[in-house]
Image 1: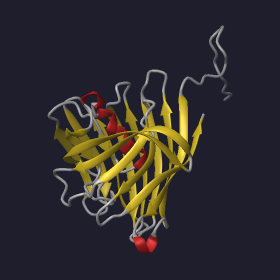
Image 2: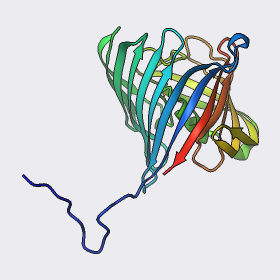
Image 3: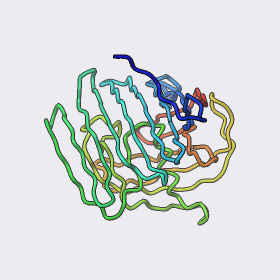
Length: 252
């Protein structure tokens, strides 16, 4: 059977209404004995559709043993509210789990298959419409920062509820739903130079994450100040001492 393309009279035969960016984030160490040693990498693409909805597709690799490999597809509506996400992870080069998440105004649900828990179905009632979701792709970390009200000036503001695909700091469990809160500090506007270029940036700091089984060290993040909240660089202190940098950015 032949197949072809149907066009609308008066319109071009090709259609490309979205815009895209793709890039690479280097995962590095800030520990004195491994300073700036590569410990992983992330390749991402963000597609923004004509109505303002957007999807991030990311492939993440952590080489520190036991290694972690993660693939995510995460979508937001035109108001930057989460709609759905897919996460698949391997740990130590073995399948750990895959899960699909859907976010309804009144609840969140997850359908997953994991090595430890087997087949899992979750439904979690929400206090209000979910504002953001943490899938552990570094490219998406900066998207939480759109929720900070900069008109109030510097200081710490709280996000009452954020759902995670894993409470593990490396995102190496599940994937399953887990609920916490976040405390975010706005440091200010800065010029930020990374390997991918020099950008006008906002500097934020994640200072608290009530509900996590293990306290997360402070996490500084710089993102673009153009309303897209593209991740530029990040540094985690404490026992982790990790550093992340945007090393390539291609707009298409």
